[in-house]
Image 1 (cartoon, rainbow, N blue to C red):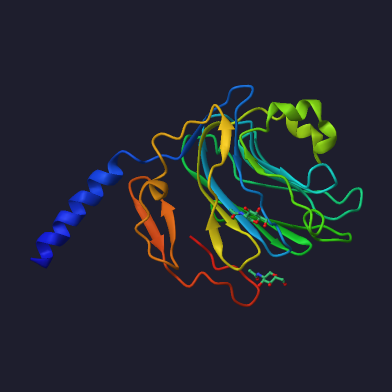
Image 2: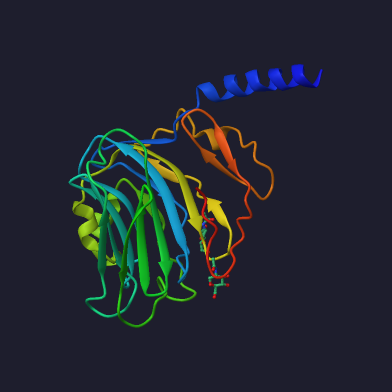
Length: 249
Ligand SMILES: *[C@@H]1O[C@H](CO)[C@@H](O)[C@H](O)[C@H]1NC(C)=O
Ligand SMILES: *[C@@H]1O[C@H](CO)[C@@H](O)[C@H](O)[C@H]1NC(C)=O
C-alpha cells in the first residue's frame, strides 16, 4: 500500500513539474527589466542567481543607494561575468571583478556575490575572484535609509531622465539582457537565505513559472531550489555560524 502511494506520488510529482521548468524570461527590448526587492547588503551579506543567455554583452543585475555613492553592477561582458562594486565612500573606491568565459552558451550559470567587510568575492559556477576595497564606511548605503531595488536585465527608462538618482549613471548604457533568470537568493543580513520574489517589470514573461514558485515541497527550515526538471530542497542547517552564511548549493 505504502509503495502504491509512493508510486502515485512520484507520477503526480512528474506531471506537476513537467511544464514548469523555467523562471523569468526577459526579451532584451530597449525598455525591458525585472524588479526585485532591495538587497540589505550589510558587511557580510550574500546574493546569488542563475542566468541563461546567448548574448555576450548584457546588463545582468544592478542595485545602488539611490544616487549617493554605493552600487553593485553585474554585467556579461564579452561572455564573462563582471562585477563592479562601490561600497567605500572614497572617490576611487570602486573595485571590478571578473570570472568565466563564453558564458553566453545558452546553458545555466550561477553567480554568487559574497561580502566580508572590505573584501568582495565573485563566484561564477564555483570559480572565484576576490578583491579588497580600501577606504572607510563599509556599509552599502546609508544606515536607516532604504536602498534601491534590485534590477535584472536593465533599469527602468525613467532613470534616463534622473541620472542623479543613480550611483553608477553609466548603467543606462549597458545592453539589455535577453534570456532567463532563476534562483534569486538574498543573504539579507538576517542569517537566513531567502528567495527573492519578482515584483514587476517591463517585457517580462513569467510563464512557465519557476518550479519552486509553482510548488514548494520543502518543509519549514528548507530552501527550495529550481532545477531543470523539478524542485530540489536544501534542508541543511542554513542558519549562519561563525560569521558565515551556509552555502546553498
Ligand atoms: C532584504 O532587506 C531589505 C531591507 O530590509 C528589504 O527591503 C527586502 O525586502 C529584503 N529582501 C528580501 C528578498 O526579503
Ligand atoms: C552579519 O553581521 C551581523 C552584524 O554583526 C550579525 O548579526 C549577523 O549574524 C552576521 N551574519 C552572518 C551571516 O554572519
